[in-house]
Length: 449
Ligand SMILES: O=C(O)C1=C[C@@H](OP(=O)(O)O)[C@@H](O)[C@H](O)C1
Ligand SMILES: C=C(OP(=O)(O)O)C(=O)O
Image (cartoon, rainbow, N blue to C red):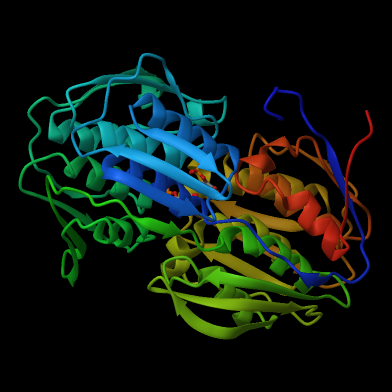
């Protein structure tokens, strides 16, 4: 839906070669964290390259409600932070829109301050599980009152006298890990998070950048992250790298549209995020990393993707899942254009994203003539091979930006157009998607009406 709630039906049709450069926007995960940690530092943090998607704009508004000043001047965002422990009690309900990252990280950040806040979101976010965050926050002493099943709307009463926490995350989730670490900022002593599988590490990196003491260690227990509580966070000057999860769409489109050759410059290849690109290479994609370099302590490269008519289905390693969790929907589209089966195990988390992503993709792919098998934590796409994907259906996007963009990418190479019932949510993470894809030569149009 658009910000005003009206669905935006869109259609993608078979396109000529996609060519040129795709300058995708800033990383969503890093953008949320810049605003939240900027608000908890003492003094002015500046951020350039911030993703101005609705998810991140909702986080900016939320941090203002907690007392930080957040303003944009020219291309730079300025955040005047209130310090760890300095967050004010908001006078209004905090509406995080469609964003799991926004709501879960902010709940963590406020849970160890003696304030109360009520959180809500859109129809998608209000269905998503929040107990995974409120359970560990209770160990700090925070109380929460929400709808049954730990759903939003939900009120958190922060701990007045927080305890430090040692917590082993029961699900592979950077949002849960980050909520605990952010809560640990205002707890005395050491807060420890133990992950069985390492998830994206932007919070750890950024906390260290802001001057907190964070150490990580791989032990028999798992990946152990230790944060020293009550640091004074020092304001930073942040340049947000471009989002690999957004880069996935023009990259995958180029691989399946005949004759394409697309360059996607300056993409962060942090190993906790880059799993899709290695998977595509394993499938035989003509995808190369050019101009490999380090920027702001992160590996960065220009991605070059060319039409790849001989893709093969593969077994995607389960241990890679966390590093490409948001990319499975568009990977399943590429798998439809590959020869043979692509099996994707270890992906239960896909069922609790903006939609049940296995169900949403399987339903649309099957309608478009692709066989899909699924279980609770796995799915298999039976590829038809290039030139044999029928398409020709309208699919439901369930308020999920990645479902919308994935089926639109599919329509660029299938024999008949693909229509999505609502492309409005694309603006949550990739507001320039339509213009960027059009510039490459993609035929994506909003339905007249
Ligand atoms: O921490 C983050 O910025 C994110 C973590 C992931 O969610 P989970 O932590 O729920 O896996 C991912 O799906 C989301 O888009 C962004
Ligand atoms: C899962 C996603 O986001 P979030 O959890 O922040 O809503 C996503 O962007 O794919």
